[in-house]
Image (tube, rainbow, N blue to C red; front, side, top):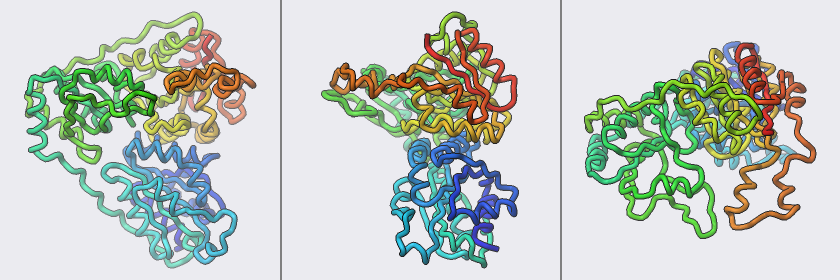
Length: 514
């Protein structure tokens, strides 16, 4: 058995049976071995950033890693931005990166690069297999390492001669490290904070925004009078009517500072201490105000829901917390704007949907319009690196084919990884993409004033304008095999959304503000 087949069989045996791939010459042994290991589903992507973003979206929904197949250092570099988002989401992900044959690397041919440096910058674990006999064990360790805790990126570099070399064998799955529990003394100490009679804010993130953790956090806040906030860009947020509604910490520093104003104790459960996303002249980066004491109940590596359960029990927080009422907005009509678009999404959302949000400024009204809708999971742009939406929607649809994925995209961010539409068409994935067209990098237009400059000159405005020429995302989608249509008003947007949910496969809808 050659190294490539042993690698594939080890991945499948370890529970990794999906690979998002953009292969090159060094990975062709892996490609050929796919016919001998049919349990591995290989999804072809047209750009490495789609492969890594799809693996991220897959892991957020499946709760287990997918693999990527990337070509040498340039392939890993092309996928790096969405690896950054995956790292911030703390999901398990296994990169398989082909390399030149070990004896060929000394010739420094054109695709030779600092592959090890690139792997180290994106990964919590990295290794290069040096012999066919090692690749099975290395792959098994990569999968186990990706689970963490917390979930992380493992990168296995496989030289071409290791892939084609004989004498390899699959390895058995490695045991996973246990998720650490929070010590009882920590829970007792934090419980005293909630009983202090002083203003407490409970900031939750990670697994605390899934249903189990969310329920416990809401009971604690309800019983103690603490304010409950969620991290700004969670990996997955369980939402909908019948679940506790959680206010998000604001993206803008001014908003977050208002939310935290007067806080005496800030308790973290799976979340980081809040800081401004960017530095601004004469404004603080640290959003934890003077006079506020930080307390960590549970870090990202801990079993955060279990810690919240234990804290709720210690506080006697047994009463159910208030929940979002099950209510939809009325059917909208008239011209398309932020409010009518949000109402259309809320009015039509199917039960069990997965929402991937990369709408940036255009979709600010959507969370409020969907809070009381059917149960759904909301995936955010965790690392702030644009180009996640369409790939993450692709991976989520592979992970949960029984659920409809709704991808909310801005026109500017869609263009980073629009090739994902081709993979959606090829795989027949049930993804509805709504592209919210404002013909600008609108968030940067707003940020101009916040960084201390007016930016009102013609040349500055032109750098943030997408109208010359106008993007035709409907034509682009159709050119990649995805049915697409343009909504002329809010009523038509509703009809197109309903049509997409009742059909199989992907569809793109352009919603242009009028």
